[in-house]
Amino acid sequence: MQTPTAAFALRLRVRMDNIPGALGRLATVLGETGANITRIAGFDARGSDLEEDVVVHCVSEAHMAAVVEATGAIPGVELLDVTDLTFELHRGGKIEVLAHLPIGDRDDLSMAYTPGVARVCRAIADEPSRSYDLTIKANTVAIVTDGTAVLGLGDIGPEAALPVMEGKALLFKEFAGVDAFPICLDVSRALTPAERADQIVETVQRIAPVFGGINLEDIAAPSCFDVEARLRDLLDIPVFHDDQHGTAVVVLAALRNALRVVGKPMSEITVVLSGVGAAGVAIARILMEAGVPNVIGADRAGAVHTGRDDLNASKRWFAENSNPEGRTGTLVEVLAGADVFVGVSAPGLLTGADVATMAKDAIVFALANPDPEIRPEEAAQVAAVVATGRSDFPNQINNVLAFPGIFRGALDARATKITELMKLAAADAIASAVSSDDLGPGFIIPSVFDRRVVELVAPAVAAAAKAEGMVRA
Image (cartoon, rainbow, N blue to C red):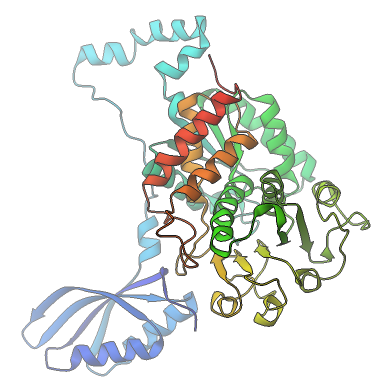
């Protein structure tokens, strides 16, 4: 059975007989359903009755429903209330705008707004760069999506994408002190990918004066490639598609440390990549930039190579710049003898027997969420190092290790672009957060709650931006 997680957390308010064994019966039934009790709170004894709040973690919405049904059927237990804690956390949204200073009297009002603000406006009109000192611009990022490729949910639209973008803004603020705001665009699904890209680019170009950076999020391929490339050329502020580059940066950081564990050099490994969409292409780019000589990508049709005539523009680039031996065949066939597997595709593609065909001391990064390409427990039986995208297993490869520090560094340096050198610097900084003493098969990447990560990544990114001259005077 899958491991219960806080993503499916319930608070059960129950009333039971105030007699020995009542709580034990409740705990036994919950355990038999597979729920994990994480907290018992709200104890309230009222004569012959006892009321308690019990928080349990489940594995799915269907499991949650089964737990509720089983609890309500326990003799002597009355289920008073059920709260889905994930929905409760989102109630009213997860972020808000706060005033930076109080307005206590007429003098404050006169300076913050009319008539005093006019002097500041004229100063910026005369010298636009002063907007970085006199407005929110220097510390503000737009999180832009059209809702076409959200998490593992796909094309769910801008309104349904808003909770994810709010969550991203929350992480920006919590980990890096960056003020980020969700911008969810309503772009017609009837348009072609090129027309969709046109509308997104035009909209972002028009709102860009407010922001110090643009974080593109959950935009489906191939539009995402076009949107990012055009905005990088049009705007003089950092543009970063996190689904591509955030994932790639953390994968490289984890791979650097995993190779230290198994004692293999980057320059001699073969990497097989499952999934050649936005994340897959970016991972291939950064791995090759870091010195990996042989990256082989595979999609639903098998290995990506120049002999295929069914490739879109991004996959054509991939074919022309990877797989130097021209390998063909299925994912399983090209995996044989490889040193590293990186999956950013779909669940259940591999078995332990498939991984066993890889080279000695194989490294497996099965990153599909919530269900990876191979169960981590199965992969661990034959691979030397295993990482996933999940928080309930060791070695979670999570973008939150990258994007807060990357944007913090870019904003601090007043960078005009985010370059490959800046991404490589970020990956090295993340990897360095794991000391030699701590490094091991179960610890190749720092925790997302390790506050040192941003402290390491931000200055490394800022220094790289300055070294390349990608900063304002």
